[in-house]
Image 1 (cartoon, rainbow, N blue to C red):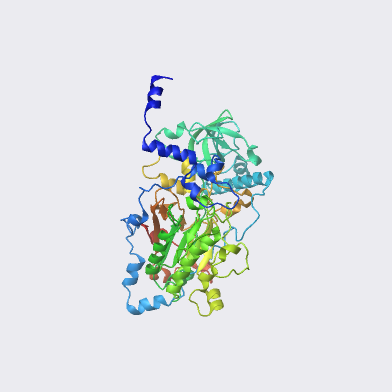
Image 2 (tube, rainbow, N blue to C red):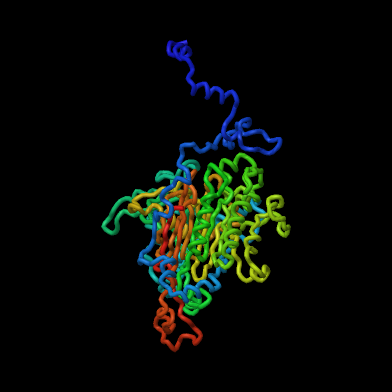
Length: 625
């Protein structure tokens, strides 16, 4: 033994060393205290890499506690370009009669967008053959390529030749001629393809970017992209900013003289879906109808789980949020999962243990935990105020312990539909207890439930209509996933997060990353389920990244409300107040006519279609719980 080793051996053990040795002998950890199913080995005995015992670290006792927070209600970020008041301030300025009339209104209309193709019920997932997966990727490449070419008026050599032979001179494009990927050409051309990582592993970087063409036109050829030309300024244009990630469909303009490497000179990062317009009469009915908004703003609250801190299952942050909802009375509350977070230490280790009102502890199923901590809170809310017009939209998460972890994700539903579990025993039958929310405080149960639902269970992702506003929501942290595997350069300061959010619209997808991040199970057989059918007015994308509210692609406001809890303390949520357009603008009669046509050419029943302009009449405040 070396002298150093001998010295260490003769040194008396300290109290801390003796405690550490005792834990090693006993094999105890914080996870061992968690109840496990009968006959199952404890996490400490399994010692498998990636198991709950090896990855879960109990929160330290010195960590900041939720009850000790001092910044509740503080606004951490906002979007209010036109200095609009809050919905509460507008209501306070009304007369007593106007406030009474507002309380008696029917409320807003929440419905699935007619163009959406998201799943409406559970389905048999992850059984897609390899051939169908390949077809799904090829189909996406085709329609995105068509969308980009149509957006920027890009034509192939054949199309230009046909126009020349027919004597028809179409609109000239400022971009080069479309060519298949991998075809050598001495002049500048434009290729459309999918961004891939040459290394297959690790993060994408400027030296490993490849462009993959379609099988139909390019036989799946892949070429290397040389991006040096984008970083160099010229007399015509400054250095171009770019942001790439695997799976992104882009158009690249440049020279590919060898057929193996393309010297890129310009990048088109996709084409956003077309914006929506709406008839004046429809807008007028939604925004000034006596049973609709009646000139008042629509208030939408958005929050994302986890809804309880890591050191308990009491769901105290959610209780505080419900109290605030009872006070503010928003029109809609969008709640994104996880509701029962499988990453929570007290859930990940086995059957969760909760206390009832009498202080008695009991093991419960995940469904019972949802019914006891989520459904019961919503039920108490409506028992407190049966006339409350607030509607809840529940968006599932892939981190929910009681739901299928597949993307797209079907709406939440009872495991045994039609089975009416007795009150307090919902978990035994997989019952989520949401029907009690619909019945709470209502005298004529059946009639009231049919006339106006209080809870809407939707898919992940989903595209909704709230009155005249189109709302897009996904609970999957796509912003973090894209940010973790993206490569960018020349971005303006402070635009990184908005550029990532812009990718979702330019790719017309709620999850454009491929291959997906580990832990995200994409079902390519249902690829249409995460497509973005229209350009949403408001896009809600909860993320662990910094919360923000910003306008992208001219007309869409992207909101990251953050998470309601952060480890053992509180997080943030978002409040959106969408004001109506001016009544004069909606009542003004304007003749409908195309350029070069007279007013008499328009059909008598034609009506002017207006852009909704939500980006100019919305106020977003992100607050701490």
